[in-house]
Length: 116
Length: 112
Image (cartoon, rainbow over all chains, first blue to last red; front, side, top):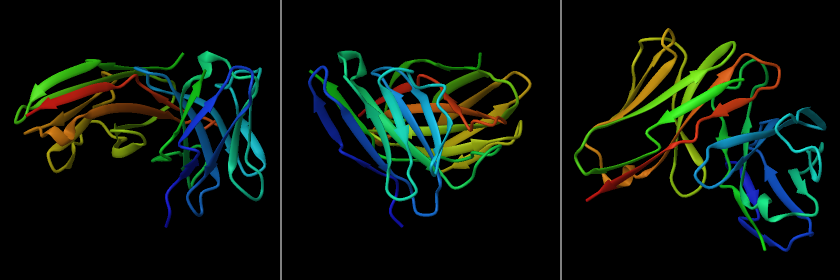
């Protein structure tokens, strides 16, 4: 049973370009969470999605950031017109259960985004 | 606003030492507290604590939760260089959004 798969592992973009980060949850998991980790900081919640629905995007900047989790295929975190401040590690996690219980999250290895 | 505060932020010890990592929290409708170990990339699960006073153990690691004083500790005895990592504390609440709040982590370095 493969774990949470994220790709790419490393992504380099120039300012103004678009970044697309992909996450395939563990088999059987329909709840996906995206977190951002800046150097020397903890994981910061961005968005929580179920299949075809955004449940909570309160941690995601309103501009330039979007996320989706289509019926088929991976979850995508999209950052348009990237700026240097977007440079961070982006982690995806999945869980088999939904609210009110979340319990243990299974994390992917993350995507390190570097904006030049 | 919910808060999760870990201390110390970093710690350097020698092999064989015992360390205690702290996590205090303020969260509405607390459900559980979780500890993760993050080495190079993905955090890996260590413990989930929901009840006060019940110690959880896994090898040289143990953890306990105090829901009255709103904190948890993670103990590592007889540390090894392989214990070097960032240890993250996360708190889960009963909420519709399934959000977990993470602390900034404690960076543990174990020297030979």
